[in-house]
Length: 259
Image (cartoon, rainbow, N blue to C red; front, side):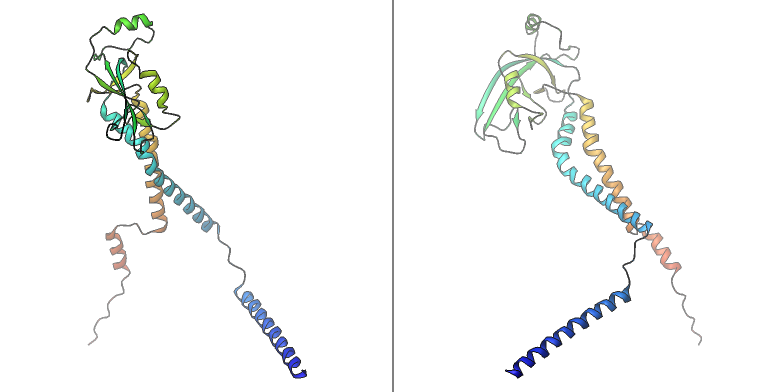
């Protein structure tokens, strides 16, 4: 029993000595290395500038993936359609409520541009095809009714926008169909000069241009400029010819053969 207790005591003492030795070695190593060096003002400025530019580049580049299909592409398609800038008069001729995926290849208005449509509404209108005509907003209902006798175009489809879809609160299809989806409804509209079978209820060229500038041009410029500055700060962005010249200047001279 005494031998067992003495062995346990010796093991405890050896363990304590081992821990003490490790602590002394760690303290000596820390004292030898000294405190961690502090970054200079220039290093701090470079670090925070790099972080900010990287954040701008990644954020602006990622935003383009969402802004281009949702806002930029419809705006470009609207400008390409070349719609009239002055509103003409439209009259709803008929409305069709369709069901089935094959019957709903298009819809006058639907909420959600990426999902499959199994229920859709087709609204057909006719309009006054005269570039000199402007919708009389101050006219009374009786005067508008008299204007419906004017010769109008062939039947066209009415869309809430060029894609015929959108997301609340900008696009609310129930309000749209209730307002324009009954036969005989008279309202201002804009038709495409390129395709007179397409009519929209609202159009403003400046709004479409501003959408392209704000949602594509600005993020694209931010992405390019921030990426260029990051390249200048951390990469060798010089031309290959300049780098070759630089290497030739610092090349060691050849040792002449003394023989």
